[in-house]
Image (cartoon, rainbow, N blue to C red; front, side, top):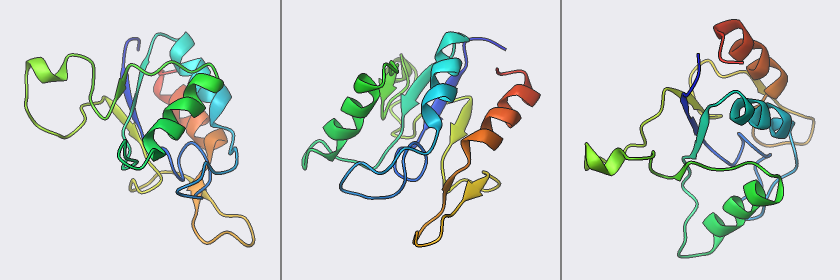
Length: 128
């Protein structure tokens, strides 16, 4: 499979929960870079806001880590075929998604995505 759109949440998915700050690294970077290298497009799908600057902080995280975004809260070209606010994607990776593999360290108050297991699942699906 090539050219998929990956809808990606931020807090608890790409980094640990620490809103409004940027949380700790949880191992997403190499998997996200592999997705981009495999020809897939990443669309950030987050509740972070431009109004309070938290969205800019998340977008900067991607820039600083060399991970290009194809869209922010909208898929490429989506506005041409729908006025829906739901972000279109072929695959959604979100810590709140049913069945997403999660981890939780001692002292954490919320779980976060297990990127080793997500990578294994993406390989099993033929996405990576």
